[in-house]
Image 1 (tube, rainbow, N blue to C red):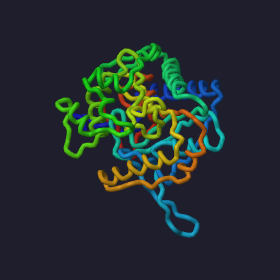
Image 2 (image 1 turned 60 degrees about the vertical axis):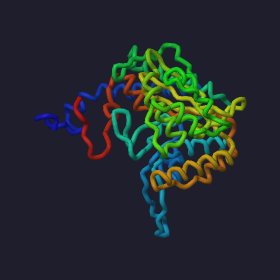
Image 3 (image 1 turned 120 degrees about the vertical axis):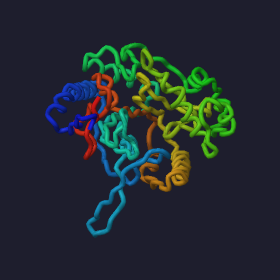
Image 4 (image 1 turned 180 degrees about the horizontal axis):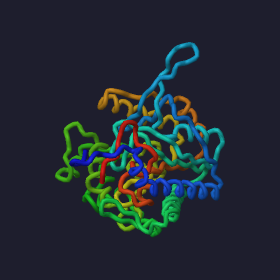
Length: 354
C-alpha cells in the first residue's frame, strides 16, 4: 500500500500501459545497437547461463543451483554474473569480434539501478587496444539516444548530453580533483599501501579497522568521485589502479595502473571495460586472492573455471566491455528506474509507485 492506495502488480493493464513506451524504446535501442555491431563486422553470440564458476570477484554474488546428471548424481552450477568467461573462450577459439545481449544474475542487488536479473551487453575486439573499445562505447550510447530521439539524459537532478565529446579523466586525476588524494602515491607496483591510503582518506570517509586498501578506495570512489561524473556530458574514467585491475592488464609503462575504464552519465555507471589480461598465471593469482577475501568476508568462495584459465593463456590480445543495457535504456527512454524498462520484474515483486 502507498497510503490508502494499493500498489499495482506488474501485470495490471494500467501499469503495463504506463510502462509500454519504455518497453518500445528498449526494442528500438536493441535494434539500433545490433545495426551498429553488424556495420562493424561483429557476430552476435549466445553463451551458457549455467557456469562452473560465475566469476571470481570478491563482491559479486551469484545464485547457485544444481543439475541432475544422467547417472543421477548432482553437480553444482551457478547462474552467471557476466558472459565474460564464455566470451573469452570464444576469443581463444578464434572469434575476433563478438557481442552478446546476455541475461545475467546477481544476488544481494535491488534498487533503482540494480536488479537481481538483468541484461548486460558485452562485446570484444581481438587485436584492438582498449581505446578502440572506449570509442565503441561512446558510439553505442549515442546510438541509443538517437533511437529514442532523446536530447539529454537525466537522473536524480543530473543531466548529460550523450552526443557531446566525453570528458576523459584518469582515476588518479579524479581522486585529486574531488577528494584531494594523491592516489598513486599509495600504490607500489601493483600493491596498494593500506596505511598510506587510510591516512590520505582520513576525515573524508569512515575508515574501519578491518578495511583493506580496496575498501577505502571504493568508499572514496562512491562518496566523493562517482556523484561528480557524467555531469553535462559523459565521463570516461580510465587508468584504474592496479589493485582494482580485475581482469585487465597492467599498463606496460606504469605498473601502478591498469587498462581499465568505466563510463558514466549523470553519476550512473554504464560500462566497465578492459584491455584484457592474457597472462593465465597472473589471472589465477588474482582470482585466488579474491576468493580468499570473499571467504573471509562472506563465508563462501566460488571455484575457479580451469577451462577459462586455459583459454586466457590462448587468447589473442583483445579488449572488451560490459555495458548495463537496462541502465542505458532507462536513461535513453527517460525512465527513472531500471524496473520500468524490463518486461517483467523479479518474481513475486511489484513495482513501487513514483
